[in-house]
Image (tube, rainbow, N blue to C red; front, top):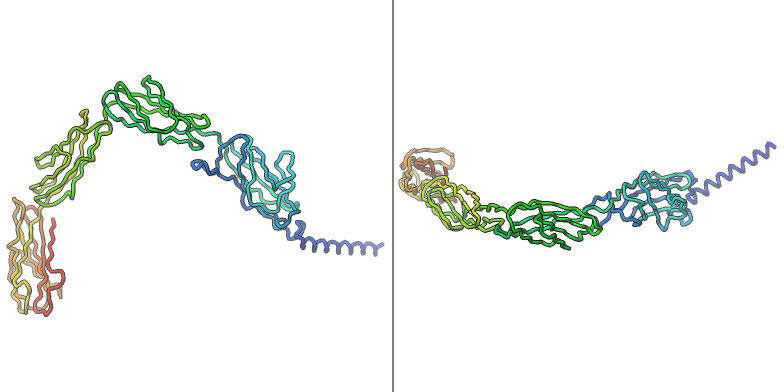
Length: 444
C-alpha cells in the first residue's frame, strides 16, 4: 500500500511538471509568467463638428451612437484567434449600450462580454439612454488575472440655445431716423441659426430674416426704443437679446494730425489735417483750428508757420450737422538755438610752434528777439587729453607740442539755448586732419 501511494505521488509530480512546461510553451494564463491585461487608453472621442464645446462634452441625440475609444493588449492572448478575454463595463453614473463586432457573448444587461479579442485598438459604439453625466469603467480578465479599471467620462448635453448678438449704427439724425442692425456676431455653438426675428419697440411689424444679413429700420419719432433680436436654431431652441436705441444725436469724434514733426525752430512750418474726424450718425459741418499763437483756421487741412519760440497747443474743434461738438489738441514746441560759427587761423594747422587764432564772433542767433550771451572755446590736446578753456568769443594761443588739437566752440543765447561746433587741427604732424572734420551740435 505504501509503495502504491509513493508511485501515485511520483506520477502526480511528473504530470504537474509536464503541465507547467506546456503552459509556459503556450503562454497559458495559468502559467507562472502570466501578466494581467493592460489597458492603455479608454475615453470618449470629442465631436469635431463642435469646436466651441469642451472635449468632455457631447451633444445628446436619442438613439445615436458615440465613439468610445479603447486600446488594450494581453500578451498571452494577443496573437491567438481562439483565446478570448472577458470584458466587463460598470456605470458609476448614467447608462447606455456598448457594442463592437469583435466583442461577443454579451450578458443579459449588455455590460459584460464573454469573448473579447486578446488585443484591441479602435472604437466601441456607445448609445446613451439619456442626457447627463456618464462615467463608465472597464475591467478585462484572462480567467486568472484582471486589468486595472480605468474610467471614461463625458457629459451629454441637450441642444444649446443660440447666442444672439447685434451692433447698432445710426445712419442719420433726421426724421425718419434710419438705424442699421448687424447680427453677424450671433452664433449657435452646436448647430446653426435658422432665423432671426426682429422687433423694434415702436409698434411696427416684426421682421423675420432667414440669415444674418444687415437690416435697416426707420423710426418715425425721436426717442428711446427697446430693439429685440430673437434667434431660433435648427432644432427650434431660441434665445433673445434686447438693446436700447436712442434716436438722439451722437457727438462727432475729432482727430488732428500734424506732420512732419511737432517740434522745430523758427520759422517752423507744420502741415495739419483733421480729415480723420468723423460723425457716427451724421456729417461734420465745421472745423475750427486754434494754433495757440493768435492765428486760426477753418480749413480741415493746411499749413501754418510759427514765428516765435514757445510751447503751443494746436486745438481742433469740430461740430456736426446738428450742432454737437468735439475737441482734441496736439502740443507743438518751437525752440530756436543759436548758430555756432567757428573760424580757425590757420585752418589747416602747421608746424610747431603754431600760433592758432580761434574766433566765434561770426556766431549768431536767428531768432528775431534773440542774442548770444555767452561763448566758450575749449582747446583739447587729443594725445594727452589736456584742455584749455576760454570763456570768450575769440582767443589766440601758441601750440608747442606736436599733436592733433580738438577745437570746440559753444555759444548760448538769451533764452538758455546753446549750440556747439568743433574741428580737429594738426600741429607739428606730417599727417592730415583726422576723419570727422567739423561737426555741429544744438542743445537746450
